[in-house]
Length: 121
Image (cartoon, rainbow, N blue to C red; front, side):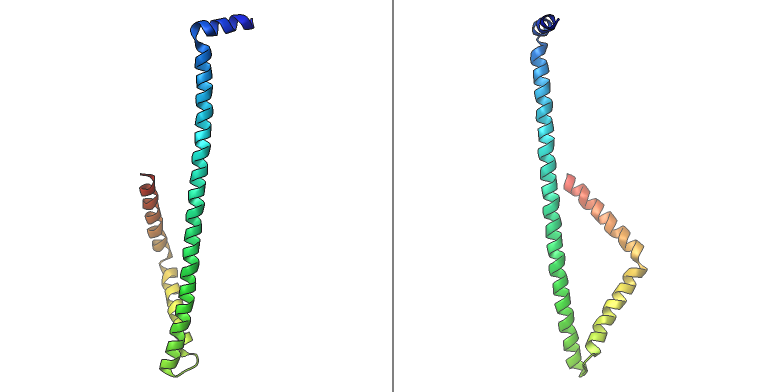
């Protein structure tokens, strides 16, 4: 039975077609694996860069805040007025963000969706 099947495949040249199709699918699977690895590597490197920029930005903000508070302390000739003022600025900023939380969130959501569409093109 096996001989008949082999001879029919050879007669119709299906043996090469089956080998080519299986080779094509194996190659396609390997290509997809490579593309997934590249995408993961790109996402991780982008995340690391965003994290690094966030960390540096936070350090800049902390030292800027301390410097501003100390400057205000000397300007008002007080030992704590500058720190209270800087704290008040952050408190007011937090209150404004808290009040407009949903509209700010929608803005960032639309922005990120637009960025994702641009990256795919």
